[in-house]
Length: 209
Image 1 (cartoon, rainbow, N blue to C red):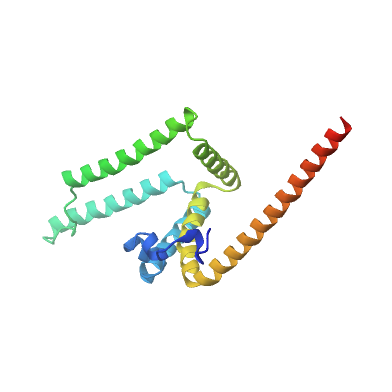
Image 2 (cartoon, rainbow, N blue to C red):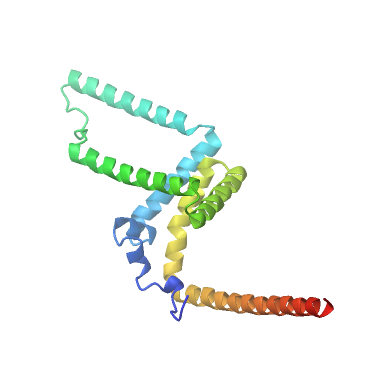
């Protein structure tokens, strides 16, 4: 880690690392109303899934059915009673939006395919180890909980851990760096002991031979 007093020798603040935009503001509680709203909505959704027995598909279908029914009846009654129609925005996807989304998806899929190809051909051992560890971790966590609970827990972690880290950044960095240096010293001592033992054993074997 070098002589820096920050994790990973970083020079930028956490807000800048997260992009410095709206997403960073939400994750770091700079927009508390939005962050709290997201947590409340996701908590409500999690309770609905866990307690009502709904699946994601059945819940989405029920919500859209209810929404379309209300809007349809509203529009029909407005026409009969000479009232204004529901205030809906014009639903339209521009060509520019579609092209941007397609470019974004294409670049990420190509990156994923390139990494997959390197792993399959044995070109990137480090990436293979990382991907394997990630997949094993996902498999273990997936066996312990369901997808909805995992999604909600992950969102809570994303919206709490970075904010707590930013608040206690200096203390956390100092503690982690101290623990890292101590563990590094222990590893060096362990390596030295192992090397000395191996050298001693090899010398004894030479003497015996």
